[in-house]
Length: 284
Image (cartoon, rainbow, N blue to C red; front, top):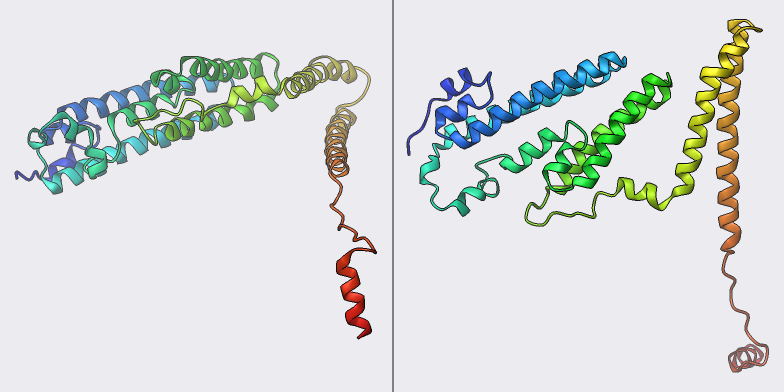
């Protein structure tokens, strides 16, 4: 067993993959190096796009956190391999090499690392796993919302982008919990939209109303009223929409309660034999 120097592993750690290359894990080194470069490239691309759409403050820290996490994962794994002194040439058959994660030698398999890294671009990780349709839907939805938020100048759509980003990452992680059996039906975000067309329709109507109010009604009102009164009207409109939505939800819950009335206790017949026995016992 040939143990490597942990100090040299630490010195080579600034670039993920060099420590594994020093330890003799050439394939693992290529995976970490490719993932690190890919994350840097995708991070720069997404941050530049989000900066154009005034969202750099949201995705910049997220991409930095992911890159730092990959760096720490590579360092922790390399330090563990150096301490154990495991030589990849002594692992034997390819089957034992694939089970390194189960044996505790590797923190994550190559497939998990690549898929999670690609998941930082919504949809790319799903395409890597073979879920082409779902990956295309996620990617199209993410960039469509990004473009619409800037083109229509509707900032309320921006909150959907972090939701889709986190959904893409964590959905890939859960899909890879058991790599031997990929759960194709466990990720059904867009299936919900297809099964609830009414909710999608109301959402599109609400979006259209918001666009009309923000791009047409607001400039027209600005010609006749002052900016302070215009702000009050906008706040009042949003409050009325929220109140109407709350009333709708309350009415819906009451309707559901009326559809399922509480169960009543069964009434016994006066001439039933059980009651006759009870009355006789009372008389005695």
